[in-house]
Image (cartoon, rainbow, N blue to C red):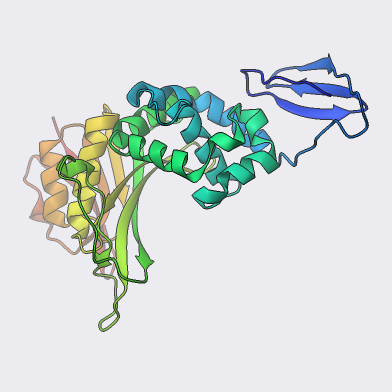
Length: 312
């Protein structure tokens, strides 16, 4: 039977005529494989995982998750391995948790990732997600900072894009764990401000922070909020979390219409010396900022785009 073992450099595998090509980022190596029968070689459709796996390795998701989530005896394998496999599934072929193990077996993920398919059952995935939940901001920030450094992506200019996603059905028994700090509590699925009058459509809100690597937007941080939350409050909480965990030295935040009121934007810029805001605001008077602030405005028929800069 052909015997192979996973390399630690995220290499891919291809077979040809009893020979094995093991390739990585910079070179190929040829490795002999002995077959004892015509049916001893098992194939798998690796698909996009061949491209995603080296990127996930460079992001060091395993190490950064394990840094914040110590080993759990119930999980048996490192939580970082489980989360990395789940991230690969989300990128390549999103499946319900109960089908991730089957995907890992059929796609060759257990070979490329080094995590046995039978270790990715839905119970183990759920326990790993529970462990990550309370440390999600720390993990997300560490992954963002490490990835930005490795791939040379600046996080100093951020486009914040809020949206909502809708649910149907009853969500009347949503409980909150009393052990969680307010900033760690999950969002509530409830009737929100985007529902049309008379429609019982429940929602939750999420805002995504996007950098740009010169080729397009790169999401690196987010904030979730209750379905009925005030949009301005959600934006403020996102900014608070990003400043607390990502800790940018300078930040230019570009937001869509409705994210900031004029007064809120001015308050943020006044109180945070490293923050600048470019936002679509409701029409405001030019004297919305004090004399020592610089206000640059381009007015259209409905809104005024204002860049607020606090001078030293």
